[in-house]
Image (cartoon, rainbow, N blue to C red; front, side, top):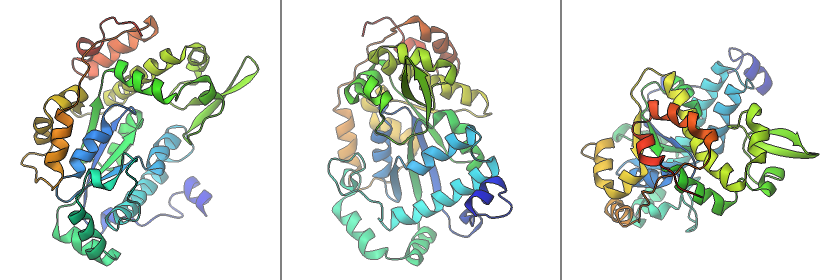
Length: 328
């Protein structure tokens, strides 16, 4: 049946809650990993009636599958809406809530114990959630890394939902990525995460290359040093973002990480004018404003020069902010 739905979405469909009386708003936060999306998501998630969802795996994979031709567009749209509708119930019923202090999505980063206790005690069923949605203006904040090349698909699913692009210095992204060793030779030969990959044979070895690296770039990516791969990641993500923005007839919403830590209250008010603070909002604003911010600029190797010129056309001031020379 599932295969039939993918081939012919008119044969089987998920019920579309967007056509029902259940009402909620969606906000997408997109950008590379380590760009500051979680920081912004937690801040928004601390507001009254806002709920932050971190990196839902299916919501990340479905757009990539659609772009690769593994899923028809109609089936993708139907599945994506159904997945988000189910996610709303799971989130408000706290079925997927993290109570692990080491997780980025740790609930007590965003909500107080009083707010969590209210949800646990008052929201016991779907009927309770429906009543809560009817009585309050609820917003679900979806933090989706590396989905920025597919924002045109997000717009087809939710035509009016805000899509916030988080922009950060690619040098700082590279530093964090290097620490995680995401693009080490070991990680490319035996990846530990379950993202969409393509297999590429080079020098007798099979490398598993992330889907955002074009097949024509796979060999060049393998030949790069680990530090070059990390920097290429940050630049390539924004290059793909620029290509997607170019296909959309709208003015994108940008939040620069450096601005977020310098004036978090101003950034928040620009996104949600007259926002209603939750119990943890003030604490999160203070935490963000206390962070050190590296404003240093970087440009490591000429392979990205042309891409930076394209990025600068669609992401204002990108080159001026980030692309002066600095060695790794």
